[in-house]
Image (cartoon, rainbow, N blue to C red):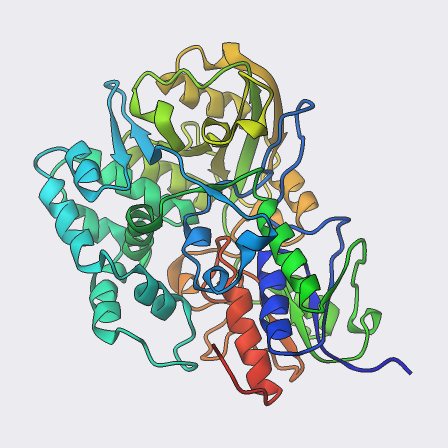
Length: 474
């Protein structure tokens, strides 16, 4: 007779693996089951275009990964995870040939926004500088599992962060600052008028100043690979190429954790219409490029930046987001681009580069945004197309086929807008629990939401070991 496991995890993305590690560290028996042949979820690295060009099909830059409270408690460096910092975390070019920058230095960042807004930016960030560890621990943890370490700091952040960004932007005089901050908000694919969108922008800015926006050496695959190796050393087991269609496909266990969409969880666990009101958001249209040289940006700063935001005005960014979330593919998309080979030459053959760009489109959209994306890049990097050796495009259908959590191409596994930005997947003080006493949700559909940080898995693991009567939440 097969002995009953303490926990089974479905899905070997960063959250599922983090949940498994957290439980295994506390002596629980854990097995992970992954449908794909390799681990990774939204953190993979593959040769998508030409031999020797190693691309990240989804996430590439990890400001919340290096600063994750969960990852920082793990010895992932022993298992090959190395963070590489570009000279500039982010640059935001404008039509006049200049660029704002998000630097490790608050002063440099503020100065790039212009004299009228430099002071405003410094005042917004100053109260939180040096407090990343406590702020993020308090912000990303569940309110009922631990008292805030710094309730005053959390309240101060919330007083500004809970505002829609459309309110916060009124503090800036010039659109240069408004646009750069709007681009930071747009990383969660939420309209700028949404609740708590100011907090999104501030969190990404603070992350750059405190920890940078690094890439893992060798690609994003290094993160799940390190988690998997650590889990195996702790006695956990990972099964790949194992698709789970119902709970009976899994071995007996005291708890089941799902690093899946709520839709898949409800189907597999027989929860019926438990998540029928859960909303999926706008999708991504992503292009991975093999380039014959670096991107020929007109402005100097983007040539040194790991990430480049392309949206020269707050109005243009707001329009693009509004169209994508409202059901229309934008003619002039806001783009997030990444240049990992600037800091990690191993990602491409000598003298060549990998480049990554995506814009936002409606959920499930099956059109081709390539021309609009490249028109936007050429606007700030004339001659870009001449350096393209090969491209791999992935619209919503292709993204959903690669990763079942990206329902309709939604890379956030659920709209990060409205109250669902803060209350995921349902309005509940126990968001990782389900109505089945042994089934838990550990994906980015649950608090604190999207990003490669493992905290959704960490919080779900807390819920499991409390439910199993295991003390200890270090």
